Length: 628
Ligand code: NFS
Image 1 (cartoon, rainbow, N blue to C red):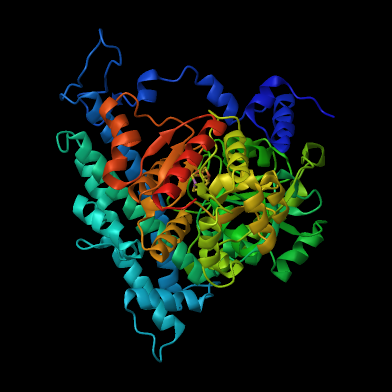
Image 2 (cartoon, rainbow, N blue to C red; image 1 turned 90 degrees about the vertical axis):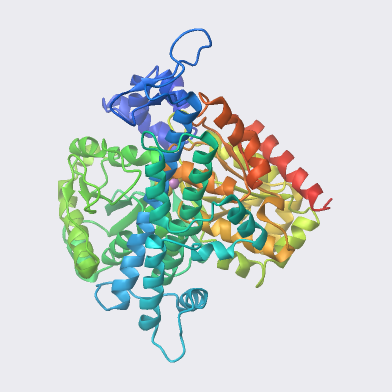
């Protein structure tokens, strides 16, 4: 048995990560954890949200101490104004990222419908028909391409819409829609809310913390019920709605005798075609010519989740493992598009034969080769990229190869449609199981890794604790991969659950933790909540449900947390957001919001205590519904 240093053990709970961290140490390579350590102590003003750089009279900072230091910025902004403006800008950036991803998918669907792309097809006609009905697009006697063209155009319009409500908000319970309307936070157009957010947070515009936070909620709703939902729905139309399937996760999925290609980033437009190109007979023959047994594609972060959910492509790891994947020395190419891609990857790749290939005009990286991806020639470009990886196999240095022998099997692919399918055609059995207290409630545990938290510790322990208490967990993003690594995404994982949940899982053959997809697929969780609330004739805020992001770090996570709260869901964060410097804003987020939107934030870094908070909340909601 290997014994690792305390420093390595403190950084992660994952054995594959321990192995690679020790390897990095021995070979003198630095990782994200080393850089995090080098940043200590981090700026106290920044941690509290008390610095403002929104204009050139600043930077300003507000003293958090009663007796000393300035209490207002140069413009006169108080701590609460500064904190609220900054939080709003985080939401705007997160909503922009998800929504721009959604826009790109709409673009791919439109071009595919018009016959202008290479390598794409419309795979889910049933989903397309459903969307056509929702958007009022006629289907009688029309081809799927004609219908898809109109649906894509309607989806496009959601971004630039100036008035009215975003189409998908109609999926929310009527009570919820009415509440948003009364509060004037119904999202109108996706781009509009992001632009207005940036306007309001400019010097000298919105200087009322409550008014700012309300618009932050509106912006986040434009993400959850807008951009993210567009991304999910249209991806399903193009690539197929996920269905349950088996795969594997962790660094051990890399193969010593094959060409290893990692897709990393977020948009399935590229990763789907890379997977297709990796099966091209001509390219496979080339790989064999160079002595490789085959071509092995693995994913990292959410583009990995997309191909894992739909194609069963194994996941190499979650956010904190991206540098470690290259350090195995066995990766011929890491192909990146947008989001969560560390700018350090180029220098790590520089120590090996690995090619870091950037593909999006929006995202270039130091040390990367840029092979720009365009849907018009999608398949040909994907083939060029895969070929470049194969050509690189002969430059692999066997002495540098170090692949941890760690991987775990998992079952993934639980779209709403797949969950309904597993339940035998409707959500009724789930609702009955909740009513009978076999399942106490549902928790969505999602989000990133963050070197502030021992890697995967928050994710795994919170989820284990929840299922033990008969709370069904749905997961996305980097939490899903953390859960997969410890066997929670297997039907056998039900052994770790309480008696009630275990019985339900065993009867249905499903895991106690259902992988619902990438982070934009948190929209699937909103749809599930809305469907359950509608079936019961109540609002989402009445349901025994909660959300958590134990290790979050990105602005996208802030947008997600905020739309969950604004949709009526109690949401527990494991990492403190930079708001504590604003007492009124903090009070609003963790208390006042509940009286306004029916949801609120909790902050708890200990996953066991977070489970207590969630259980207490779920119990209270059960009582509210008159359930045992
Ligand atoms: Ni979500 Fe997915 Fe992971 Fe966080 Fe990044 S990959 S989109 S932002 S780090 S969960």
